[in-house]
Every structure is written in C-alpha cells, then in structure tokens.
Image 1 (cartoon, rainbow, N blue to C red):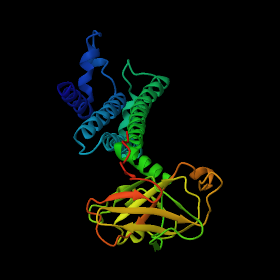
Image 2: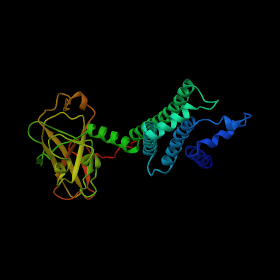
Image 3: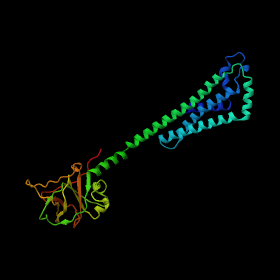
Image 4: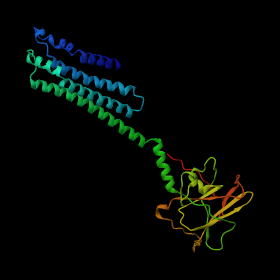
Length: 316
C-alpha cells in the first residue's frame, strides 16, 4: 500500500512542479505535437488537480502517523485536507490577481494553440477540480463522523460505562440508615424486626462495598460519616417502619440483633411495614457499633436463629 502511496506522491508532486510532463500521454496522438502543446493556462488546471490529489495523499500519511486513537487520526486527516485545500485556494487566488500572471495569461490567451479548449471546456475542467476537492473533503468528513460515532459507541458500551450503570442501580436499590441507639432488650412497646443478613464492616478495605459505596444514605450525610466506628451492618428488604433503636445482645460466642420499631405486631404476630412502591424490593442497611470486635462470633436475630452472611451479587 505504501509503495502505491509513495508513487502517487511522487507523480502528483512532479505534476505540481512540472505539469507539462503529462503532455507525453497525449502528444503521441498528433502529427505535430510541438505545434499543439497546451497553453500555460491549461497547465495551471493540471497543476491544481494534482495539488488536490496530493493534499489527499498527505492526509492519509497524517492519519497513519498521528499518535492517538482512530477519532483523533481522522480529525487530524480532515484538518490536513481543510488546511491543504485552503492553501491551494489561496494560491489560486493569489496567482489570479497577480499582475505578472495576468499579463502572462493575456499573452498566452491572445495566441492559443489549435487544441486549446473553449471557455466552456475550461469551465468543466475547473469544475472537475472543485468536485475532486469536495469529494476528498466529503470522504474526510464521513470518516471523521464514522470514527466519532465509533468512539461514542465504544465509550457508551465500555466496561467502565457498564460498571457505572450497575453501580447506579445498586445505589438506588440499597439505603444506608444512621446508627440508631443501642438497646439491650426489646422495648416495652412497638416491635422488633429481624434482619435478613449481615456483613462485617472494615474501614480499611471499605467492605462491604454495598455499604461504603453502593448505598444511598437516608439522611444528608456521607456513607463514610454514617459508617464511622461501625463494626457490623445488618440488612432487611422493603423496610418502611419507624425505627427507635437497635436491639443488641452480645456474648462471647454470639451477637443477637433486632431492629426496634414503633409499629406493633398484628393479629398474625407479624409486623407489617409499608414501604413506598419504588422501595418495595430495596435493601436497607443499619450500621452497628459493637462493644467488642465481631471476631467470628455468630450473628443471630432476636426472634429466630442465625442470619446469613451477605454475599454480593454476581454482576454481569
């Protein structure tokens, strides 16, 4: 590919410098080619066409060596095309308004060779140069747009973006409550709700992450502030009761936990909380500061046996 590219650069560069060399491809058709050699005006058209192609070839080189991703490469190539075509247009304007060039063209135009194209022919020649420049610019714009769309798609579907969506969903599904007062027994009024699971709190490792980073505080405080000094978090689903404190009974071998609420048990001896519909399946976490480190002690609920250790979900 680069051999063809180098050959293209060589041919177009030579054509820009000495456009008359291309006459050899046409002169063979005529008996008297010396008398029919095109005018300088026609060579200016050939030079402009070669310059447009050379700009496109340089843009390919810029895209290949630009030290970045495909989006930046195509943007660099597009910038090269815009600058190159702009310089070419400026050069054409300057040569057009130049007095010396105008005088030279006047002399040349006064004595055109027999094979000189008509004004209409030149119009179509210049039009073809403009179409070539526009086509190269359009291709550059299309490639830049495709590269940008590819970059946007990659960013939107990157592992980081996917993980951010998962983290956002986790925060909506987990609520972190404040550290409520510790009670050494069930209150005389109201009831006690058993948590469904628990997890030790480690401030150094920031575990469990569901409490440190993937929960939304129910008050205007940070997760770190709420969890300060906590040794344990217990969780329960769809919580909508009014908490008065945490029942906590510690022994050498166990930690018994319950969530004290103002609501009384109903006739079926169950406490019915009515969370908002959007919180029906959310998990509520309650941080607890223990009198002594957990150190492998069994965590139990007030109204039943042991509760399970929280295991983070396996996320896709």
